[in-house]
Length: 518
Image (cartoon, rainbow, N blue to C red; front, side):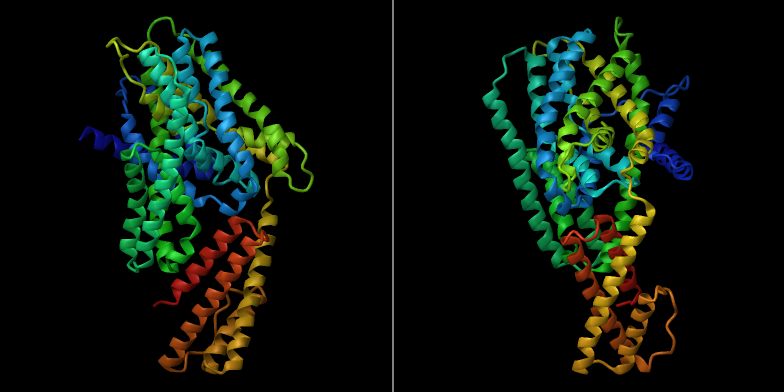
């Protein structure tokens, strides 16, 4: 009952904090961490201990799945090379640099310092998506940092397992075995994710019940994660691959009514899980500090130095890679590099990895340095979520890279015009066939003409001439919406509109189609 009460309290707290964050226009994750930290510092506040299995199994799958579904596959194709470089090269470099820095700055042994480096080596998809959701970043930059955070799991997980094995047993590293485990985790997770996506797609194509569709969508990330972990592959990679594949084909698997319901349900689930998990990050730190052994009082300065080193190293890697984000000039850009570096935050996954470090070594003695690794990891996560999270919007705005609201409005206006014209062309083709009542044709044409004149909300005049005409009008309007949806996808695939515009206008078309009724 105490655990249930704690969760309910966190949900209520998160709702209030998110409301305030929206009103004050600051990122909710950053404010949630600060509030959790403040509550944990209140005298008499109960200590919070979270099992890593709880985060790994309950929280991560749906959040990773939602982030993967949001990823623009079209934009990912344009930046896949820098994503691979970051997901492999930067993760390895970060683990090495932080391991050396940790061994130099802290009382950690070399093995445990390398464990710390592996834990903090990769950016976190949950934090990156949550912080970047409200920012008007260019598509390539957003996809770069989001894609990197989604696909660097296998690299960091293999290194983490190797580092923990060395720290626990003090044995030599078998790099050939580590390489084989990497291919098992990455390749196996990708294969299982593709199979899960294929099976789920077959089921969803044959399902028309919104309730069943919602249940399937909620179960899919958990099923993918558990299946992959049971086969000793990467559950995170499996969920990401399944989410990317299913998100790419979502328009073919469901209709407008089901898509709207899924968006509403997943919006609630993501909000609750993100809110609870970011509050937990703040609540954990004071508890971990109390458990620190003597002689580790310099942890705040050590955590600050490690966070600064991660940012500087990331910036140095991003400068040459920024040329890939500027297809016109192909020159490195410090502005692009600064934004992409500042957007790469740590979050839930490093915390879950640190919590999973064994308590004892192979000889049965307590594992030295575990408490300090947990504290430093959580402190760096809090730093990135609070400092980088609160200042990210300012960095983006000062860089001049933020898309102005007028730019987005103009793009949406041009796209609406193209969709309306596509609908009118379809009506002209039907008129020549004379297969639809003239009254229905006239009503649909007048609606499209109103949209063409920027009066999309104008009310239509004249009642329907009987139920037959009304049904014909609805069928014809659905046909036009289908044509407009296809035109919207064509504009997106031809790189004429952004993914944000595509999602926004598809949502409007879904609302319009749902309003027609069955």
